[in-house]
Length: 330
Ligand code: PPE
Image (cartoon, rainbow, N blue to C red; front, side, top):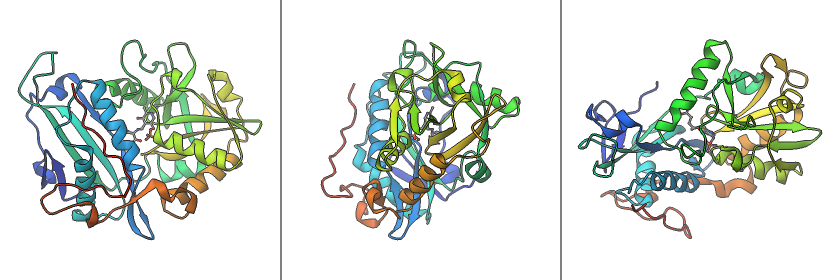
């Protein structure tokens, strides 16, 4: 991976190599952590973070769902992120905040283990490759089902939950595909290993609803807004596996992956076997939104700058009117 110089860890900026934990860290053993994936893009007004507030809100919600009180207010994490991008001299980057149960207590009862927080930033190209974004990827429906809402919390972005996605990803790669598509308990289409999924059929855009156990993707939300603004009909409903094969177009969305056409599923070409016009249209507008080239979506961008930070690391809101996010309580 591309290293940066500094990582923010528990209130301090430390050298990349020094951002370490003890081997008996609770989260390492039991997966007791929650995280986010956020991106910062180069825009005319400087580097800007895409939908930072929504990502921070989901991060604190995930923490709360796993009974983790976050020892820093969200505004402090926001400021630290801005400072981190500036101090690492990055124009665009991936941002990975992580909140986890640290060292001090073993055993499944985690509430006596300290809660630690780290934020790393680094340059990370498109997750499924530039070629994938242009030409489309080949996906395989996984033999693994997406975690059930009866056993875990699909709405939370929690570290341990990702073992499910790791298994699906390994399976798809070993079978020679670019990505996995997971079904839910009932056999309905859920999502990719790290992306939400959309199918275009007869002009309408279909995507699985919250009840299918998806992660409530922030890119998904952006895609839905853009699609509606472009005048497309958008329907959130259960999708069967074969409906994907029969779709005119399929695409996936996620922070790391951005917007990626799917050209083949289980060796069935989708539509013409090439990225379709609706996918291309949304991809183009989404790309403009990410880089601040579309007036309609400027509100999604938070320009990185020293105004967000003060020298002692304490915080002010970056934009007027932003509601302060509360730290989760037990
Ligand atoms: N589903 C899953 C399971 C998921 O991990 C992600 C993001 C999404 C949907 C899309 O959510 P959003 O980014 O808010 O649009 N996956 C993150 C982690 C990927 C990774 O491999 O690590 C990401 O894209 O940053």
